[in-house]
Length: 282
Image (tube, rainbow, N blue to C red):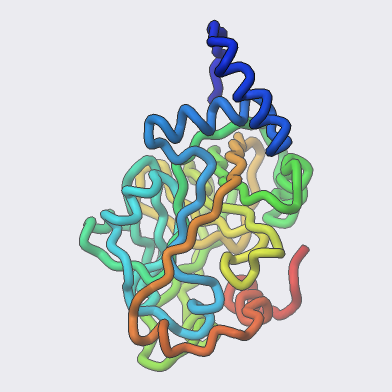
């Protein structure tokens, strides 16, 4: 949420603000918030990611960052665990691990992740969504709320779901890539369940780094059930959006990553792993 700030500043500061606005094209509000966040060491509107989408499609599943490290960069996000052992949901500062059947446990700070995306969630937009018939319907409505095809967007959606269909990756065998590993994932569903969807929309121009399009994980209100969203329906939901203007990637310093061939386009592999079919999404 945002607050209005009214204050008096010196003429020299005013001139510097005007010069910065001319140089960057940003609004005064954006510049003031950016400078204050920097002064107080607060990363607003920053996505922090470990590893890349291409690396994960290639089967680079060895952990390269701890949950404690991810929490230092955000209180909200998603990912997976070492060896693709379940789905990660980072929500309100707690990291949860969803395994086969949607069983959720809180992950220790020492747990390792090979791939995760987090932010400090501070939403600018909130809207109620009535009679959401499917995941495709949800995504079409969210599309109308996004101001650009080029921003990353953090997304939180709360409510009671008439039905939610989920999956959880099962621990990968040695040498498996993402498509092979998700071929034996656990799929399950829950009816009449309160909870929250946590995730991101990432632009197509970043597809070799991030998972482009919508990527959402679910956590139940009682924190006992969860997984990766593959279908849903609900009568009333509340969506909050957080626009992300900075994208930071931590490149793993593992021998596996350093020797991998990451030149391929990961789109088809991600489509099969995420949705069970090939073909780029808009």
